Amino acid sequence: MRLANLNGRLAVVAGDAAVDVAEASEGRFAADPQAVFAEWDLFREWAASLDTSRGDSFSMEDLGPPVPRPRQVFAIGINYAAHASEAGYPPESAPVTFTKFPGCLAGPVCEVELPSGTVDWEVEMVVAVSRETAGVRREDAWDHIAGITLGQDLSERTSQLAGAKPQFSLAKSFANFGPTGPWLVTPDAFDDPSDLAISCSLSGETMQEARTSEMIYDVPELLVRLSRVCRLFPGDLVFTGTPSGVGNARSPKRFIRPGEVLVSDLEGVGRLTQRFVAKGSGT
Ligand code: ZN
Image 1 (cartoon, helix red, strand yellow):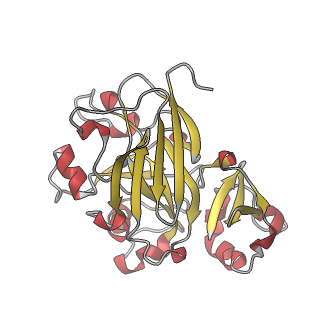
Image 2: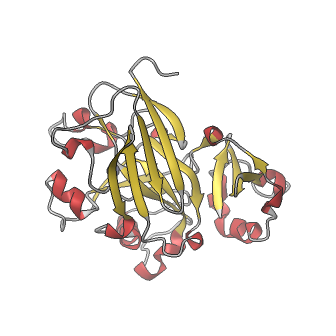
């Protein structure tokens, strides 16, 4: 099942069409896409018998972030060995954990105004938590995942590295620095949700290309480690880390310029498209 945020309303997407959940359920489930996670199991039960043949066509531009207001957004750094190596970190150290402040989340197709500095791409698989939990056991971890989506962990490297210590969270939370989507896909829709092709290209040049099975700490392990410390809530997001090929690690370094388009893909999920504009020229 694919769950989308269409003009701020929860929709089930089947093929090229979307079914409005609040209408189809006659108000049993709210229109707010964030509200569904509070009664996730009941929703899945209801949606299993939903007739998706009567959906309406829609435009990708009208999609918002599938999880618009997560209570917590966890983000993991240095989670692919090749990226650890290009960034100069030992791959065997613990997962680096930070947040993207939720105000930076955006939909799958959007314009991003470039702040001063050096803006870089980081394509990432993102998972959404399905229920309140702590102390997740590895064997149960996928039961705590509502779905998988695609994200860009856009990062402004100059402010990230400006302080006495790296400021990941702040430098990755400018407006629209967290595009996600195009929808949330439930884990049962994949043959193997832990082995998906992931890539991104800038101005037509492939910059990152990997498989999510290359993660150092896989999704179950991340949930185990995060939930040892933090209580997880329905609709929380986890950005699971980026593969190698970021601009900051290239020689020469390569950052996003005004007018460029970043296209990101995740197998079985879909595509994000971000167009970048100069500071002060955002619409
Ligand atoms: Zn990242």
